[in-house]
Image (tube, rainbow, N blue to C red; front, side):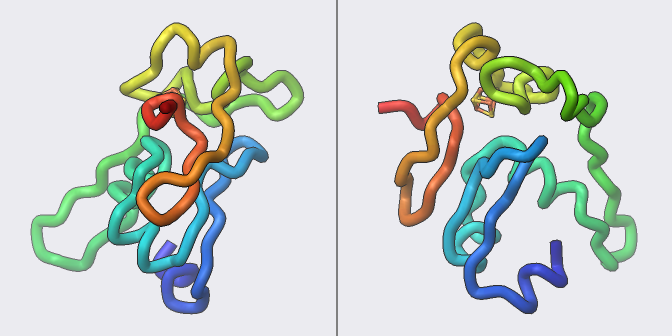
Length: 105
Ligand code: SF4
């Protein structure tokens, strides 16, 4: 993640083959919106003394038989009923794009 931040101006965050968030790299790193992006950034190792890793719960999904609806729903702490049946569209939110029902209008 830190290498991507260093070398890119624009970034696409993908989960199980789907784009879940995209925008200017600094914007996404400074203001992540998708629950997966937020958890991904928390799981990046830090060099400060006493810093702890926050591993993501759950298992990576099967790409042969991915979860229906939002593919992140089995691991998402904010999953709602519709997340299991309806794939969220990629929409403009706060200067970048995110695919998550938390941002439905
Ligand atoms: S659409 Fe639902 S399951 Fe997917 S990331 Fe958003 S809240 Fe979580």
